Length: 175
Image 1 (tube, rainbow, N blue to C red):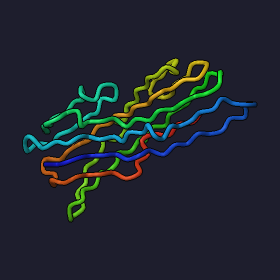
Image 2: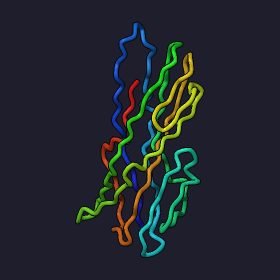
Image 3: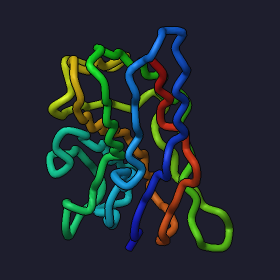
Image 4: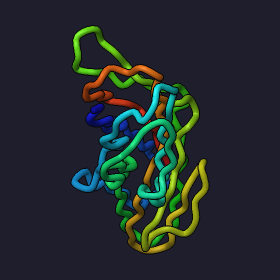
């Protein structure tokens, strides 16, 4: 059984503003959840894929694999807390290249996420609106949780092992 696919923490870049007394953004590191393509096994000898739905992970799509428990699929998520009364817009620059996930088995097998497959979903009491390029906070303090999904391709004959990616840059954001 291929055990688990995880994409690790993304890097964060917040550019400073030239405004007098800008509102504060705090990234609450205790609320980061790493992306996990779940625990699954191949169901046939064809290529497969898993696409994480960041809004509803249990409604993620997949083919060529079986899950005993689909709730093992998790999007990457981070919660941002804004203090102050100003509206703030932060912009996303999503990673465009696919990333490799490496197995712990001898031989260095890897799987690849699809290039440009990252999808962003945002929710929270501080959210005014968002799209795939930016999000805007409401006036006043509030929280926004950003969730990121992606597509993982699975070859017809992957090695059975845990696969992990280290330090992937899923997206960068700045204001």
